[in-house]
Length: 114
Image 1: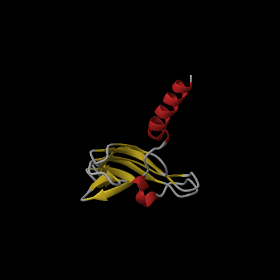
Image 2: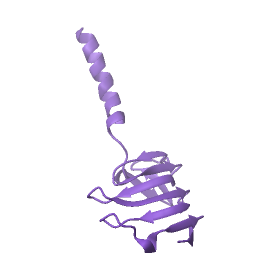
Image 3: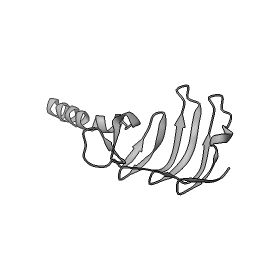
């Protein structure tokens, strides 16, 4: 029984950090236009959480992104394709109202309409 408990505890110690810890923007760094986990030479692919939530693919911001203010209020919603904004961008004030000057439709990183 003691051997089984020790084996389970050992497995939990190895598996728990991968389950509990998640990546945030603070755990990444940018080098030559690509995002990497700190102390890694492999461009980061995966999801991040925290005040910014989104995905990276081969070191590039990719897919749907949502940002929040420190108070939990929505800050922005957008979509990226290889670091370029694609589709709608909606920016919000801390009170939840839409910031008109930063809202628009983007194609290949360029604003094409309001």
